[in-house]
Length: 129
Image (cartoon, rainbow, N blue to C red; front, side):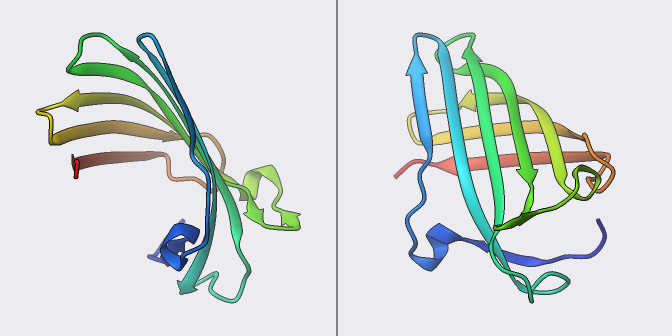
């Protein structure tokens, strides 16, 4: 895809969404059945899109975990797009607990469908409140 689209998640609108996660020993599993809405740009005239994501990671040490994250955008609710029009990405990831207050997440993503970017790099530096 080209260009930039301003998008917000349901939680930013005050709507309730659920992230389902589970820590099991050194494994972490999470599923986020997100709804997204473009406010400006190419798809701003469309309704909410279903954009699920998932994460699986394995804790190598208390400070280091490796895993993968999967992100998708399947299309608007009530009408999912054809597979080649959907976005599917998978990211091998590295998570670092830098301190009790700071976390670091890095991944290199690969597109799995025609309408997804071939390569994307993500980096999140988080502060725990």
